[in-house]
Length: 194
Image (cartoon, rainbow, N blue to C red; front, side, top):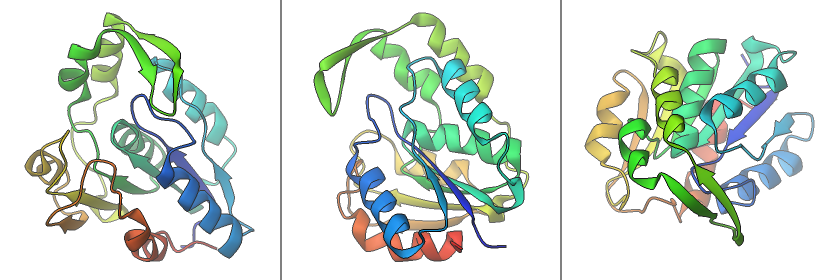
């Protein structure tokens, strides 16, 4: 099944302006102009973020949609893929954001616009817990690019969270996947873009 609709979910403090989102978006527009591309700015509330996403893809054909998520967006992408039964590409996905983001409660700055601030509320941690999926129904629907050199997340936790998935484990790398361009061909191949 080819992918006709592609959703990109950015990470914590990130935005549609992230290098990976812009690179993939440009690739899709140039190489696959018929594919519907959506990369929304996600609100800080996980519940609000997922509500917005589910409303946005409600009319999409689940059989031919796919989602790409980076870091916290990878956690969200897993939720979307399990809910919609679609393919997902995960880029250094957060596997336990309720635990990891608890220390970020308070005012935060946006990564790509440091003058923009938002408040990460204690209740958001509980909202993240609600979105956790117990296990993968279709691990073959997942392709994860995981860097051992990730300075934010533990690669062992990431790989352990996705048993049976297609995993590309990078010996070095970093959390941002600065060499993302080198992995795009494999990602696009897995997604089978229309």
